[in-house]
Image 1 (cartoon, helix red, strand yellow):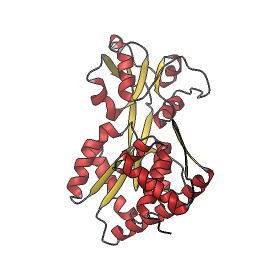
Image 2 (cartoon, rainbow, N blue to C red):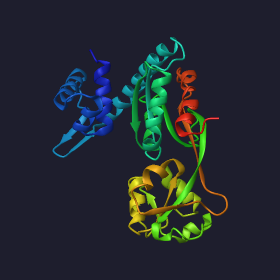
Image 3 (cartoon, one colour):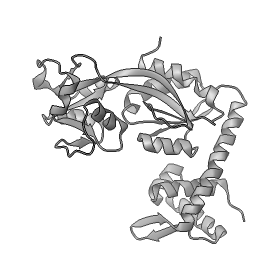
Image 4 (cartoon, one colour):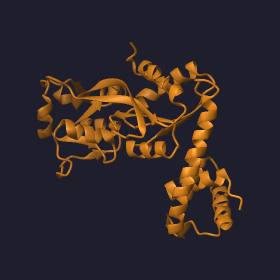
Length: 297
């Protein structure tokens, strides 16, 4: 039996995406090539790993069992590669970095510049998605580190706080002269939130003491930019982090208000697996993140 690591990686991508096109894009190969590799893997195993239907693809029972074993092998292989890198010193070589959508557009341009200057040979791969998926991909060894809002409270991950930033209230431009509001007033306003799955949504609801199970009359958006444009249209108000102000408010008829009294904040940090031998090198991300965000000492 001759199963290759390439086939395992292609299988993992397809098991996650359950779509040949998206999995092929993720693996940077053509869809026919991916299909051939998956079929060869199934022929080698003499097992059907996927149930193929005209408009759906799902893992079979044997496919789910195989996925668990394949993920263990791939995680160990990724850590073996990381170990080999770490033995050559603390310079970052390949870095697979995850980042949440409420940070990525505002931090990445500066961070990539800082990283490439500090580590000219770096092979950087960036993955933007929501926190739960980043955690899963960290645990599976598909990512080396992730930039997220803390805390995560995941015992298997090292959490390193980098900086703390304030939240601000975005209101329609017609309310530019309105007095600042206190945090406890937000629950009585039509607060626009990100759709479910975003940690920023959960943070905003926590700040405002909103019951997540209570029906809401507001609308949800897929990005902070969408929320700000909705505010500009007079639909409601929203919260955004400090780092998003310049990018998201310059083309919308809105105003930005600081809060009366204590403002809500979020802690931004970098996380990685406690077992990752790249740990010492990943510590280099902390000052680079602070510089990129303008929070350096």
